[in-house]
Amino acid sequence: MQDDELGYILRVKGDETFFRRESARETRELSYTASSCTGCGLCYEACPVKAIKLGPTGGIVRGFIDAPYIEIDPERCVLCGVCSAVCMFNAIDVRVDGVSVRGNPEFPNFLRAFIFNQDRCRMKDEEHQIPCDDCRRACPREAITFAGIVERGGKKVNTIMRDESRCVFCSTCARVCPAQAIVVEKVFEGEVVVDHDTCTGCGSCVDICPTRAMQMPRSQAWEKPAKVQSDPEVCIYCGACEHVCPVNAIEVRRNKVNYSRGEERSWTKTWEKIFREL
Amino acid sequence: MSCDIMEFKLEIDRDACQGCGNCIVVCPVNALSDAVAGGCGDGEEKNFGVKAGGVEIYDPDFCTGCGTCVRACGYGAIELRAEVPEESREERVKIDALPPSGDRAEVLKLVEREGALSIEEIARRLEISPAKAASIVLALKNENRLFEYEKHTDGIREWYTYSTRPAPKKEERAEEKAAVVRVDPEKARQVRQSLSATLDSMDVVKIRFLIETGKLDKAIEELVSRVKEE
Image (cartoon, rainbow over all chains, first blue to last red):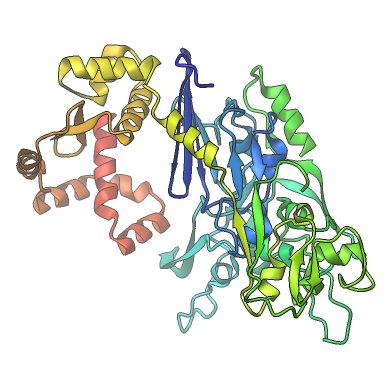
C-alpha cells in the first residue's frame, strides 16, 4: 500500500495512532486513542479483514506491560469504519471526508440511550439543602458530574451532567438512583457464562471489567478459591473478560444487538451481518 | 487467544528469584495443566516450573500475558514486556516520509504559488468542501509542510492564512497583538441583553453549568456568530 496514487500517511504520536488514505473520491482517516481503549476486543471481533491484533490485555490492564491494547495493521486495514461503529468506548474514530462514521446516517450504528428525567430527580434533604449525587459516586467510568442546585418550577432541584464520550451506557446510575430518574437502553442483550470448573480465580476479568460487573466473591483461606460472577444488570457484554481469560473459562453470548440500519448503501448488508455475528 | 496476538515476552531475573514457587501456583495456565497439584505436578502443557532453586520458563507459547505471576512475585523477579520488532518501526518512518499526493499535493502547489492562503480560499480555488480543505491543511501542518502565516479576525471569528514558509517570528508576535480585538464589556452587556430571549429558550441546567464554569462568554460568542450566519 505504498503506492503514491493511494496517498497514505501513518503516524504514532504519544497514545494516538493515526493514519489516512486518500483516493480520487474521498479521504479516509482513522485515529486510535489508547487511553480511552479498555481492551474489550469488539473491534478485533468485528474487523472483516483481520487487521486488528489484540494484545495481552491482562498484563496491560494491570500495568505490567506498557503497550496499547490493540495494534492496527495499516497495510491490511481498508478503513471501512466497522471498528469505529462497534467501539463502545470511543477509542477508534474513522472519518470519511472529515465526517465521523459514528452517528452518521450513512452507516449502521449501535442504538443506545441515556434518558435523564429532571422532574423526578430530587435532593436527599430539601430542607437542609443536601444534594443527592448517588449516580455520580456509583458511575464506574466517572462520566457523571454534579452540576449544582437550580430552581425549577419554584422548587430547588439538583442536576447532573453526563460526559457523552466517557459514558458506556452500563445502567449503574439507573440502578442506584433512588428516584428512578435515569433510564438506560443498552446495545446488547445476552448472558455471560463462566465455566466454574476451569476458572482458577486469577482475577484478570475483575481487573479489566469496565463497568465492575465482574465480581470475585470473598472466600476464606482454607476454602477453595472463589469463582467469578457476572452481574447481568450492569454488564454491557463488551467481551473484555472473554478475551482476557487465560484459560478460556468465560463465554459472552450476545443474543440481541440494537442498531439502526441507516441509509441503504452497498455496505449496509455486510455491516448488519457483522453486527449480528458479534 | 491463540491467533493474532501482539508479541510479548515473560522474563525472569534469576538473581532476584528465590525459588519460592508462588508464581507457579497462581499461574492459571499451569493450574489448567495439573488441576490437582495446582501447577506443581508433572503436567506437560506448562508455562513454567521450579528447577534448581529458580523459576524456569518451559514453553513461552502457553503464556497469555495476564500478569498474575508478576503480581504474586514478592521479589520483583518477573517482568512482562511487549516487543515491537525493529523492522516495523523502520517501515513506519518510511511511510511517514512519503511525499503527499492527490488533493494534498494540489493544496501544497496552490499555496506555494500564492504565498499565503486561508482554508476557505483553498476550498474555493480547488472546488473542494471546506471541511476537506481544513483536514488536509491541518494534516500538512502536523507534518511541518505548512505553517500558520498570519492571524485574521473580524471581532468574532479568528482564522489563519497558511504558507509553505514559517512566518518571521518577531513580526508575527507584533501582528498577533494588534490583531486580537478585546471584547468591550459595555458591548458584551448589550449583546447579552439582546440575546436574553435566545438564552431563555436554552436549557436552564446548561446555562447554570456554563455560569459556574465561567464559559458563558464563550457560549455567547458562539451564539452571536450563529445569529450572524443566519
